[in-house]
Image (cartoon, rainbow, N blue to C red; front, side, top):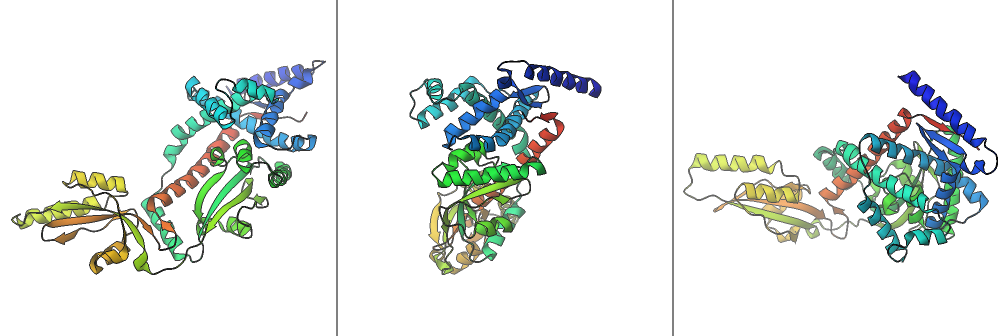
Length: 422
């Protein structure tokens, strides 16, 4: 079977080579890469470069085109892998999804509905280049959602450890970052990718849009949102990234940073500082559930109910889960209450302060029964919000990014890829 596949690839290469050797304008249809049994032509590269220049606002010059070319070829290779994997998994991009993307592009560019093709043609962009990009992104998104995302698991222990680390670290504050990540396929590509990164930085500083460039070139999970990674606790960043962006002014762009298998460019959108304050001013978003225990209830039955509620309470992980817990055990959950620590009596204040965000307190007793408080989030006075769900989401995004990189690396490794220089 392997020999048959090798002969098949050999025949494909021979046929493609013959195509390149045809006189006249055949060079326009030369082959720059073969991905398994699919070819990428110079015409594909030319069209995608034109699209990238138009969408990102980069200067159209021979020098810029030359620097973009290797990265564009790699993007087209990856998209070919997406389409082939989607075909293997019987995943399709339907017309409704494609047309919705076109509609959003029309709206964003103030183009009349149904006139996107004419708009692209007037700006010198082959519509097929856009069509291929849109379809590939839809297929890749579906592959990730079905076959990569389910592998991402963030445990309560990881969230607790992160929150504890953030609270332990002093003076870090939060930073709102955007990122462009340019992959390095091999050691030979590093110089080319670094040159491209420097060119992109110069273009951004001259007026090109960071978000549009991220959408066209970045391989980070944030590419679809223009590279925007949202607010991140500074102390959650790796040491090399933290040091690299420490001197970048708010609104500024970093110099290229070499990561494990990529070159990254960061934009510092904003910063906010944590100011130490009296903990009594700390704000809490809280829900409450009350469980009625009649005074004439037998002692053994009361203890059994208390134990059941305590065991169930320990499994609660979110505000939504708290609502389900309350309903299941015969109570109703209250609406979220925003309160300061000083608003509670000392006994309850101590319990609330010791309970982490995203957890419920131990049951508290009074004459009529039990009540449990759910700490949906904590907010330091004049400071940073330590939101359990937000930390969980940040960790999931980080893990998903790593899983996507590994999945793509696996696709590349398993594929037959023949890059060519024309």
